[in-house]
Image 1 (cartoon, one colour):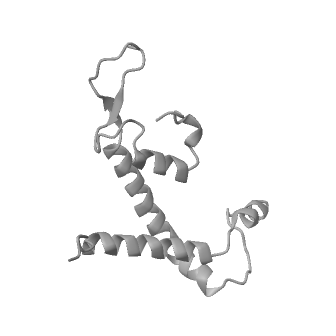
Image 2 (image 1 turned 90 degrees about the vertical axis):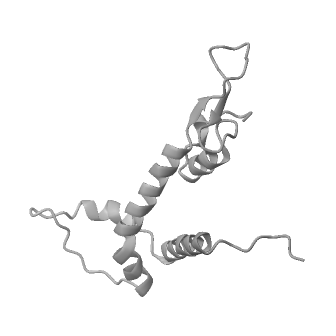
Length: 131
């Protein structure tokens, strides 16, 4: 007898979509160094006339990057709206620092979802060590 519930098809589909975005992004060439160099080549019309060799992975990434980044940032904002601190209402001797819980999942603040987002975006320096 299998005690595990079958995977939710919507959740599985979303996971596959996010993993595909991650794989396509990893395959594409990073443009950070090139973008810095190309800024100095902007012409009087505000464009950089360039000739470059792009691989198929780069073209696939660039073709969908704007849409995927918009969707991803909307997801992040929605998660932040869901996972935010609220006063847990507990008794504490330190009234300046009340006990906080996540409004959505009720974990002690900062909740695992907020921590994961903070770690992914490099903002972990502001998180308390003991939570």
